[in-house]
Structures are given as C-alpha cells and as structure tokens.
Length: 291
Image: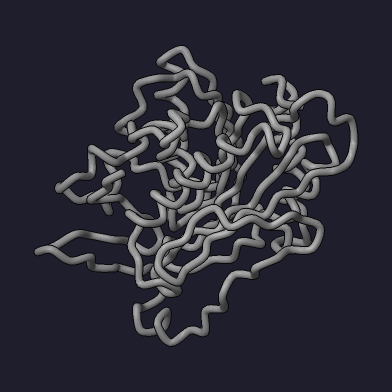
C-alpha cells in the first residue's frame, strides 16, 4: 500500500516540500516532544496477545478478548484503534469497550500502530498498520474462530480515521486475497477527512480522505460525537452521515450537547458518557445482527 498524504485533526499534518510538517492544537510541538510517551504494553490482562507486524525492530501487537462460550459458531469481531492525533495514544484506551463486548459474545481486539512520538512516523504508516491489522485478523479467522464477514472496525479520533480509511480507500489486497475493508464501522469523535475542513491541504487530500472517497454506502456506520468538540468539529460527522444516508446506506449519529473531544472515555465524566455511548453501540450491533 502506498499512502502519500493524509488529513489530520488535533495534530494537523501537511506535506510541504518533501517533508511532513506538524501543526498541533492546542498544545505546541515543543510541549508534545518534551512529554514522556510510554511504550504500549506487550500484554494486556485478560487478552491473548499476538504480533501482527514487524518493522525493523518494532513489533506491533493485537490483543484479543474472547470469553469462553459456545465455540461452534464463529463470532463477530470488532477491532479498535486508539486516538492521539497520530502523535501518541495508548492501546489500552478501548480495553473497557473490548471487555464489555466480549461479555456480550463478540470477539474484541485492540490494535497497536505506529505514531509520531514513539516511532517517528506519519499517518501514512499508521493507516498502513491499521489495514495490515485487519488483513492479519482475517487471515487468522479460522484459527481464532470468528466470522471474517462480520468484522467491525472502530476507533476514536485518529483511530476512527484509520477505521474509516480502511472502509473507503481502495488498497491492494493481502497476499491471501483478503480484504481489509470492514463490514461495519463504530466511530468515536472520528477524523473523517471532511472536504471543507479548515485543515485540508491540496496535494493528495482528496485521494485519501474517507469522506471524499465515500461512494459505496454498504458499510453500516455508528458515530458518537460531542457537539462542543474543538478538535474535530461535530459538523464533520454530521456531513459524513448525511452522505452515507443520501447514498441509501445506514449511518447512525449520536450528538452530545456540551461534550468535548474524547468525552466518551471511561475515565471522563465519571464514566457517564462511556456507559451511554456503549449502550447505544450495543443497540447498533444488535440491529445489524452482530450481537
């Protein structure tokens, strides 16, 4: 896969004169670079951990949550990509979601990917890693015992961008002729590459924007978004959902008055929005026959 230019929110990226230039909001670049960014864990309690990709001395892992139960029927699978503006972020962000959905009978996964402050990489590598994670999972569907035709990609902010990019940007298939395109999306204040974003840039923006490449509405989509989000405006999610629905697809958008970016995390607002958004997600999954 070859990705050259990717729109970015929160940590805003532009490609100028052959190099990536970062614009960070609201923090300065120096404050980010001086931060201590811990490595993501090799193992997570309650999960099976697998290395899905190696790049030089970097090992990228998937952590799979799977409750024991009836193993005769392959389960649906959901994979989450963490947020952090393609700059940082923790693979543990969606562990509470994974444990909850595993209790509901799904196989659930959190995926690591490369980010700027850990690996010196750009969104090009991050999106490529996300796509490779989905391909690796589908190649292991028989071994892990999940349904490769019921794969949901989810994520928050830049992780939502990765999930949406996998759904809408044409890429080369894996060596086993597998697709990285998810069957549904579960997005939490995602970056979506909206065409009128004030952070858009000309070179390559249209080619790699999920919004601008949204022509096939066959992927049912669930979005929760804070209406006071100053990093990724609520308008972007609204326009994305309108486009899906105008194509006769299904997009479910839940806007939250007064809620900011990342409002849905379990450690925000005493978990109030986490409980409400996950309740709505479960209803979406039930409606679309994933639960």
